[in-house]
Length: 462
Length: 93
Figure 1 (cartoon, each protein chain N blue to C red):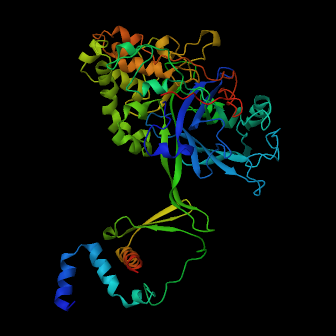
Figure 2 (spheres, rainbow over the protein chains, first blue to last red; figure 1 turned 90 degrees about the vertical axis):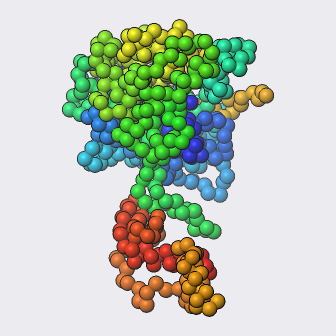
Figure 3 (cartoon, rainbow over the protein chains, first blue to last red; figure 1 turned 180 degrees about the vertical axis):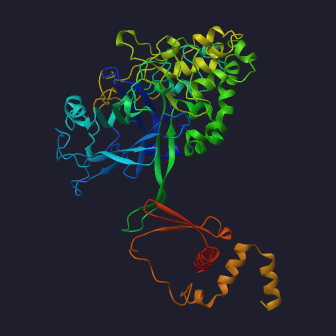
């Protein structure tokens, strides 16, 4: 998945597990940038009675580096606090929750937002902000979208707003297929272990995540405080990633003594580009990668320059990728896409390069205007839509197909004109389609979370 | 075990085994009254509440003290040794 359960240790700590990061110029407010960090993978909507919530003991952060060194210049920090209104009830809600501050919600959450600049100066932007309940069903959370979505969008002043709470999963991928030895439906007949072709299945359909979204003026994020309009202006580019941190020590309580945490926060999860830790970093380095910063990523460049998946594709699909199989040069195309940004001169009138320092960040050129809805292409830049991935990432971008095609060799020719991509490289997909809940046209853009009562569980098959 | 054979045992055992051996012979541990010094040093102001002292390797003398969201690293071989000895003693008890 994008980064759901992507490393052994963080897979055991879902509350702190980054699943997706999005960064894009807001289509309905193009003077602003929207930054979204999702956590808690694969929330089954009916998963009560203790439904999903943010961790009070987790420091959630969204980082922006605007000076090319992959060190945060602007960080938004989010801390949560949970109350129990009726400790004598086992219920999540003691009646219908008809408003975000309804007393019938037994475990309301609140949060603070703090902006930290590179010098360490902190500015509290908001506190005691309300998180909406999860979508339980029509009796517990009636009229969920109308009741809770707008009520959970909080104005931070300075043309900024924030949301934190459950949303529908926006990422789509054929999980069952891709993790079954790289099967790409509907091309199963070409696999090393062939089977009958079948259509793709969206493995994240019907699941939810917990979203933190903030929308701020472009000028709050650029290093010179400007709102660039020239895409070739280096000041227009920034790197974005998100993280989760826990205090270094947790002492489990005994008897009536509660658990205790001590020590500074230390990072346990991070995410910039989708699928980076998932399919680029090998098993032995995944947990360590999560503890490190993007500025430390030089040591992982070798995995980008010679990715395991690019070596596997010709093996799994004999005869389908002959040009890729024969290509033995470093994958400078992937280095540009994932670690440095695309320099000027590769794609006409476009660049999102942050300099030579290799770091896994989503790189967003904020001078690229949003593409009108009728003309967007989920394939982003490789589909001719420069407002999409890997120029940042919009909620609907088909990052699985983009990265599969890139790894399969479709982008090599951008940096090495002597290479001719295999026909399959420009046709490859994971075979699925976006069957998630509809996205919103406005902040926080991700769709209404699936309800526990309304959503049917997956159908078992063996 | 006579003195010669006890010295031989300590000489061939590893550091951990040696610590356990010493602890087992410590009369204060045998009575459950292990002390690190005759008179405790005065506590700094506002010393209530929990904190954690973490010794990754006592031989370096590095003690990481974590309180709240703060972390202080001190290099004090004597402190690290006393903590290690106390830990070994409790294990032996």
